Length: 114
Image (cartoon, rainbow, N blue to C red; front, side, top):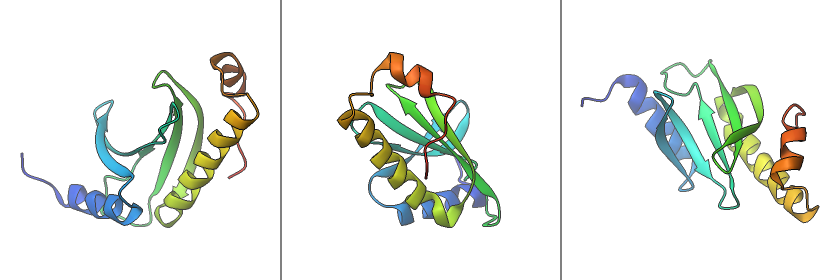
């Protein structure tokens, strides 16, 4: 399958973010993905474009089963910083003993400070 200009631009962004990131097809969309290795992972949606003015949505997932939160309208230049803050947030949830499915279900509609 031939890659489009959008695919090449997304691949470049993914490389710039670092080795922890990769491209996955999620719900039919090429997304940038990072597994935190602690039952949490992030999906960065809206990056398959050549426009650098568009913004991404970042979804924090727990155990691949449900979304804990979504950070919307993130400039491409801020994706790495926001994802790193989400990683810190998940580590804090574990430290506080709050990384349980029951507790995370209640947190789903609150937005962490990023």
